[in-house]
Image 1 (cartoon, rainbow, N blue to C red):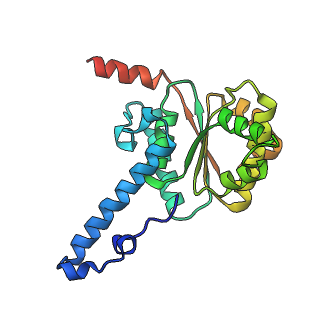
Image 2 (cartoon, rainbow, N blue to C red):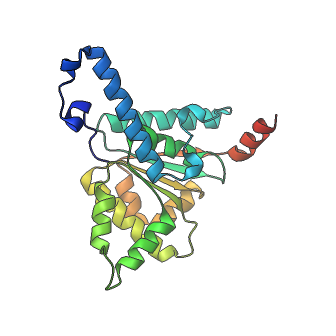
Image 3 (cartoon, rainbow, N blue to C red):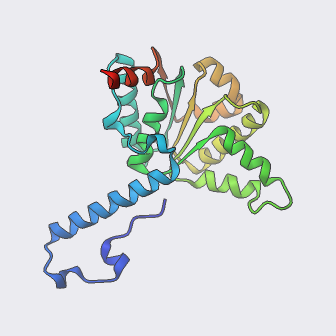
Length: 225
């Protein structure tokens, strides 16, 4: 995501000529920054999550409260420029994607499904491809934040494992923050990504395990009530 510019830079004008106070200029720039963040958020995350954020996450159980707290801590860490990785594991519908998208909403970055990245890399091997595999790894490697969702749900396990190692290694070398999401258990996840990828996560990774009943089921029940 490109650096957000001030209103003066965008329109090349001196707002002081219009009698605006500093606090008014700051408020205009804050609203502009928020609008740009929301526009980027809607561009990269699924429409299902356009209205979601940390504030809309219904943390009722201890596990959900811990997941929300760890997500907030991760966000604050990356805002401070720290190199860290957040691994979200657990059963279907427990709010992993909701919180990951909340991080993107606040910080920017890219949200991608693992099977989709695998397909992109496959297409990049074609002689007619506009982007090479190296181009894709460069793009995903330098993104300010990268969320990879649905790890381990695709049918092309070997290709996905290759992709994960390449991207994890690229981001490790660039010291870029990453969020990895899977429905697997911690043991299965580490076995799936392999020793080399897991080794690169050792330095920076924090794992949050989502347990309990489906978060989506809770939302539907609350909506019905």
